[in-house]
Amino acid sequence: MSIAQEIAKIQSDLAPYSSKLIVVTKTRSIDELLSVHACGALDFGENRVQEMVEKQAKLPQNIRWHQIGHLQSNKVKYIAPFIHLIHSVDSFDLLKEINKQAAKNNRVIPCLLQMYIAQEESKFGLDKQEAIEILENPELANLSHIEIIGLMGMATFTNNTNQIQAEFKGLKAIFETFKSQQTGIASNRVHWKEISMGMSGDYLLAAQEGSTMVRVGSAIFGPRA
Ligand SMILES: *Cc1c(COP(=O)(O)O)cnc(C)c1O
Image (cartoon, rainbow, N blue to C red):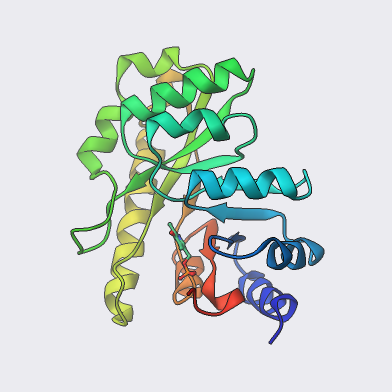
């Protein structure tokens, strides 16, 4: 199938759910990204800052860029002028740097806290207690150029659907707890809206489990080199 057909299939799979497609464009060429744009898909996810910045300069300006990979504080300044959503916030220090660079650009940058949900050691992310510490940090109220709008998680890389489903349910449960307990709301910097979970192999399962954004790459473009 072509890129356009793959995108149409995923969008029709997602249509019954309130989950939207972020097309993960890392390692893909400018021509491939232009094909995606031609389909009307406007949310692009990259995990390396340099690659995103280079592509952003060459592509139509109505694309919404999502930072989905681990973000180092010293790289925030390069994406601050245009980034639409940072999915991978995993420390208060990073949040402070995003706030500082957003202020320089006269912007408010939306962020997600990246939660650790997998049974793997290599993944980045916060546990629930660490997230609460960020959300209840009294300094959060001073960060007027960021907004925390939800959570992101990556399931274990496995074929075990039951395990992936349990991890998605776990992330959704944390989200619902934070939402119902209004965790962080007093800072005025937190709005519980989004859950970013689901990738090529499990986007449908994620949508069924309450994801609001799925991040899909190889199901659209084929395997990465
Ligand atoms: C690469 C990547 C994806 C997409 O992975 P696919 O298996 O190609 O769909 C999603 N989320 C993150 C954080 C990634 O780095």
